[in-house]
Image 1 (cartoon, rainbow over the protein chains, first blue to last red):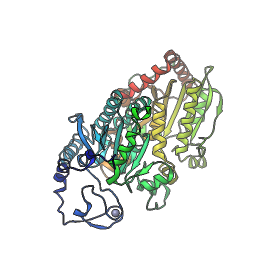
Image 2: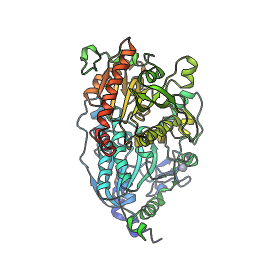
Image 3: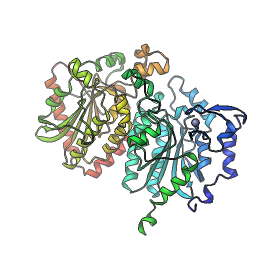
Image 4: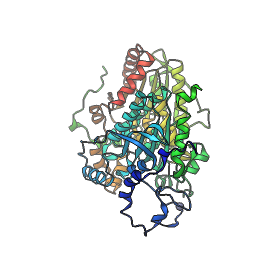
Length: 283
Length: 265
Ligand SMILES: [Zn+2]
């Protein structure tokens, strides 16, 4: 277990971030696992918020996930926020999302360490307007890749998104191309891009940077797809099977490298990142 | 004399009307291909699994110069439209396009794409075969192409399914074409839970060529008319001129300029 360094253990300072969120749900409360339906005491989910029956990882806010996986985090562009919100109802939705998630956009970016390995990381937050891809979301992710390229760092990206942000129209679509340009430059520098698909990853995020990694991991039973299940069902007039668009199906079809339970994720990321370091390759 | 439209007066533009026209069979894929290039040789298949008939691709000559041309086709008669899912490509359609784009880069041929799609097909096989991955990598590969690429939206430019073939150096649109993140119907049903309010949605979505030109999402608007041959001739001249200019750049410069174009959004 040498690779599982002490940096990676969940210490008290890290739990503090998650406690603030956790406190809203009483320990005695029963929750149903969204995947297997098992009734679980909130307390039983533990720090990693994982179903003890099926290993499904409950949806996390970005700052909660950060507390579980990373140390030495230095946030980038924390204040970056969209100022053109003339679309009907957009400002109100944005204000609520900011209050709920303690973020200014649907992605948290910065540099830090995972299992002791230095990385640039992005964590999307499905509680921030469904993790939708706004122009500032795209800007933060693009800058993350640019920073990683300039500093010769790998990028670890935890995806969680409902897709495009329709309030921003075509600008949201353009982010898919903008980020892809930065991914291409990072790729050409010979640097590792590791994607962790979390529940749910759909739409324009799936159709861009979520599917452009060198290595693609997924959390158990995470929903990952392009089109929504209801759209598909109404198009083909057919009921979809239960595990359609789940991580296990993507693994079987060849679109995911490995499914990793949340408890083992940091260790696995550390292991993979360490094998892509220049000094390792030189041995 | 053929002139590109530089600006359109807002009062002359009725977004709902443009949405309606963009879905009519004003121009057909094969008519456009044959109108723009001579000696067209169609190339089939993605070399991985299949051949998607909704994506027509191949090589031809534009005013003598070899080019790669790729078009999304909605189909001509009912049967054809059904088999092409009204111009909604499957993942293997995007993978065929990727193959042809990379081939174009190898042989230093400019690329023309012609786009008319309501979006990538939302099907069971499409999902199983990685529709998201197919679009993601069409965009990524487009960002690496060392040859000039011009994308022309001639009907509907539906979301990621259109962007997959429109990550280019220049985007042109026909006067009655649209380009949007989702359909006005989809937009209205999300916003007001009422797909019937699509005309209102169209009005606020900014999906018309003039809106998109203003935002620099597109670069040219192609005027329409009954004399298609005249339109194609004007397009040929402009394509030739632009390719000539871009081919003075090195492959590296072309890639850098393309990435910079999208970096601005
Ligand atoms: Zn469960």
